[in-house]
Image (cartoon, rainbow, N blue to C red; front, side):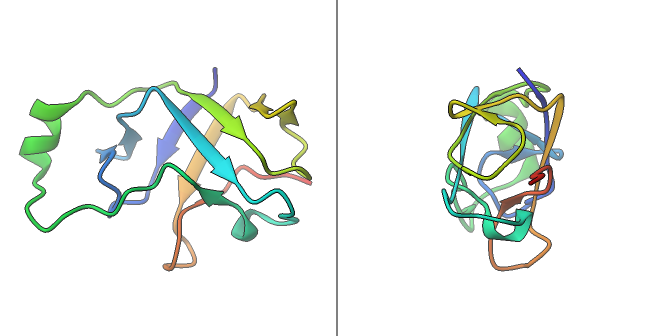
Length: 103
C-alpha cells in the first residue's frame, strides 16, 4: 500500500494534502505521461466546505490502496499500484493526475 499525498485542494477528499479515502482509482488506460492520467476518485469540493468540517468528517490517511488502469505505467501491476510513494496533483489546473506515473 503506497504512501499517498494529494495537492488537489479543490477535491472533497483532500484534508491537509492527504486523502481521506481508503482507496482511490487512477485512470486513463492509454496514458503515456502523468498529465494524461486522471484521479477517477476526484470529487469537486462544494461551496460550503471548510477544513474544520473536513477534520471532523473524516481522517486523512497516509496510505491508500490504489487501483490503477494507466496501462503504460511502470508501477501498474495487474491494476495495482506498486509505487512506494504516490502524489496526486493538479499541475495542469484542469484535472487531477498521478504525478508518480513513470513509463
